[in-house]
Image (tube, rainbow, N blue to C red; front, side, top):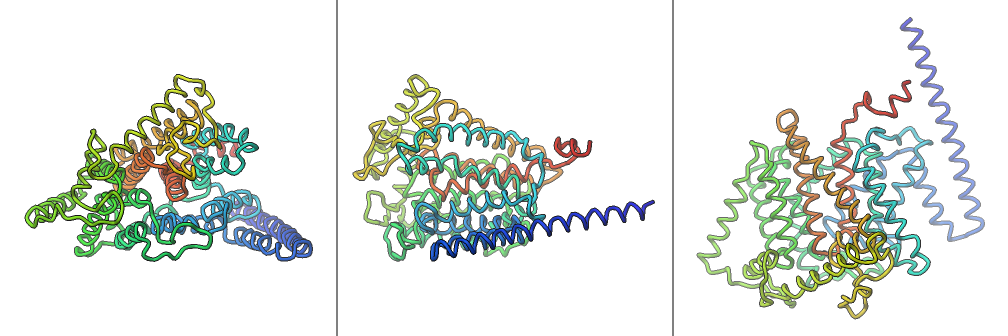
Length: 507
């Protein structure tokens, strides 16, 4: 009886592979025919069509990992080169948008390749996924009416929520072992990212190497500061949790080297922006509160005390590095940045208080015309220049469009419903990670540390977006939504005994 059952199973499997081969052959012939017609009708314009067809065939044979490896590549590309890397491509399709399109194509090809499968239907029923779909749907509803009037501006503003598709694709296609691989890569690249952060800082402000991608206004080695700062927050959480030593123990000198380079990077980048200091402090604070008992947190504290003592003894705390703008690299500037976060200060160390009050006034106005005004339900939509409409434009070319706060942008453009969905998503994602970290300390200590790391990293993103035009760009937007997708995919119980789709199929 067992042999008969095995024979039937083998026949079914061969039948499946035969049908799959027939589908692949038919699709390949269709693609070849389309390529031939395009070449005959379009001439040179058939080159991008042929490229798209080639990528389609590659996805069919390689599967979802072609897209996932490209996602990992662009994430670390943004981490190392920031805005310079984001300029790769041709307006309006840059590398982030191209990768997003390939992800959607991969999902559409799911019926034609056995290398592309939904990991677990249970993931679709997670509250984060439902909220993401609602966020995309509501904000798309507030975008479509304005495309005819504002054209590309409406689509450009829509990336604030459009990059959320990355999260959905990761939840559907990416396996937990793939996320393990991403975390290992992050740990391996920490020393290189820290060493590179200083050349990135100086070239971004002094344009020492002006090499740029054709058509880009920014040099290839360029970061506006907060894009690098949020990764410093992720790195400090990673090192405090000793995740860089989980899979391969590191030499003591390399551990100290990483901490010294992180401190230097934080000093330089922190002098240029207060948001960076806040997100790094909060990221480290989350780890201190939730760290496993075996985590070593004394090293960064001792290093900080040592640096302060040396500066006091050598009188170097008054030293300055002038970069030709209104903010210098100095201890005084760092202190001024920290003070300006929590209280009123002066403008002796750059225009800190002026920019702070300008933002607060703008945010007050947004809350007034939404919570108490005519835009409660709908917001102003995607496409309108909020700086012009609200009367806070400060740039001659009128390129400023958003109020230096992604949360306020959701409120201003999507109204209170859009803002409520966004806040609900942040709360649910962070509570999932917090709960996992607290419950699994004993049974799954490594995964519990992963949960704390994701929590600290995502919280750093949420904090920085409160001070900057942050999630509206691919450098942070794609990183944020990818981390959200990985958090859901990695910490979802995929037991098919409770999978409603699997149960219906079994019945």
